[in-house]
Length: 183
Image (cartoon, rainbow, N blue to C red):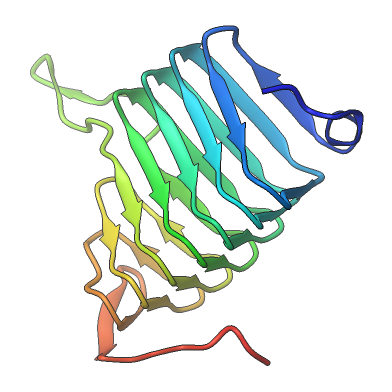
């Protein structure tokens, strides 16, 4: 995908030749950095996406990040899909506040008796999820649709749909909830 001159000026974008970026309609990206290294990686943005001052990394082989239509990701956030055959999926109409960190990998391998003990794992964040300030979402989790993750939480296990999870590690404190993107 070729970026227009406005995207190049306001953002830093480094993409290897074998990687692909797909952008939907009404896409706004300001002050972002995108790094794509490796083979056959992809970055897919739906329609009506808003991104502000964040770092997106897709590094490895056959890795992908998908951001669903109507989603917003706030300042200081870091979204990373690394290693091999890893996906990070953010559903439609998700709202991520400031300084959200989402990582499919620990960033470096750790071995015990010659066997790797910290493999990278995919992450799925379903539709209509709200993630508050300073949340960390670690590898291998699924956050169910309609859920809310509270401020300063660290998500290390799956969160069922329509739940509120808070804490470090995040624990479900309410179920069968709804939320609105209205102030």
